Image: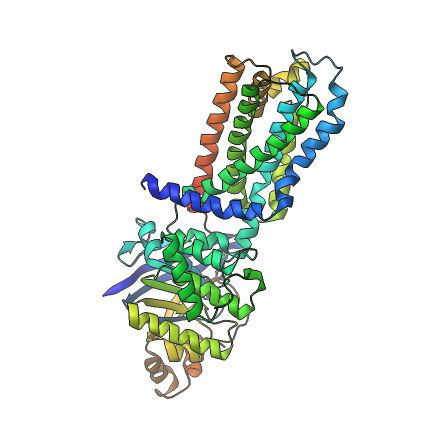
Length: 253
Length: 260
Ligand SMILES: Nc1ncnc2c1ncn2[C@@H]1O[C@H](COP(=O)(O)OP(=O)(O)OP(=O)(O)O)[C@@H](O)[C@H]1O
Ligand SMILES: [Mg+2]
């Protein structure tokens, strides 16, 4: 298929779901609630603690909270597909000539837009709390949020198309999201961990993303940490979108 | 000229209780412009067949072409040519009638103005005028069913698959839908492939009936044909022929799935 229908199909699907999001203020704001609570009630505990890092504790915590927002928000995106599946909307769209890739991209781009918007709100709140970080670093942080939500939402939709019941989907996502959060050092850097935990956490891909955003918040851009973070995020995105499109193309029974 | 032809089309589902042979080998040709009634008891495999012919479900056996496109090699071609109204519909309750129709048209690559015009045309044809700006959740059951049908007609498909289109419609709306189906065929030569449990509807609307039971075709002919062959004469009730062919009632009732 050529590129023009893919772009217009993606824009069409994005528009449909963006309008759906805009109709629900609750959906727009709910995702920031959990990270905001961490910022308000957990952040102040860290200000005087030795975190083994240059800069302030906010430069360590806020990158973690941004990715936590992406992790928990985007992983649960698939719930929408389960609901729409029950309404028959998913089949009705799959029977049209619309690009299968667009069915996925339109949705995940809406998710990325939504979570980057929430990330902006979170960073604004953090600035009030005392965060100081270079603008370029903050923008890089948003780029990582966008890429991570794109990937996780793709996989979440793919899983939802396979599992098809909220009872199967919810626990499966929880079982993946919790260890991902703990092992990637979202709350406190893994450099504080005992050796075995630090080693284990290197097998958790999100760790490289968190470390990269923390590095960006300190203004160090040309580092191997940034390189690894960027590579892992991009590789994960390619993998996730490929899996997602395959599932949207073949999902049947 | 055959617009649909299938050879040994089959689908077996894998379930926890073992494989379910929903469709066990359907050989069928449908002429362009024909209105085909696809009948059979609950669980006979009608919906499964429709889902295969519209590319939603990959067959586990056999082959088919629809509107000149091979089901397996050119699913995109099949999708462009077909409209499908599913047995249980497919609209989002929180979206307006207008938005659903226009988006549907644009999924079939109509321009925005084309889609808006077509949405107005169809809502008039289907007695939905005045409801364009209502959320679909506020429609009555019959209005929702008519919206489902409008969704399937947005792009003027060459082949229209209707899965129990008139279930839940009042008698007047049913007669209106029959007229609409006849008009679409007369004006555009559209082929209509529909399932129904209403035998009066099949009798009145279909040029030809194909009766399936337990995943295979058990009878095929014009309504008059089937009545002569199975119920003693062309004026016998179609119900008698149907019962003789399938050995059970056509009224909705539970039937055991074909598990092996
Ligand atoms: N996804 C599935 N998994 C397992 N079995 C299925 C699945 N879909 C359908 N079946 C089974 O296949 C058989 C045929 O189902 P189908 O929906 O095609 O029947 P139908 O002729 O449309 O019936 P009805 O008149 O009740 O709509 C049934 O026994 C059904 O239980
Ligand atoms: Mg059915």
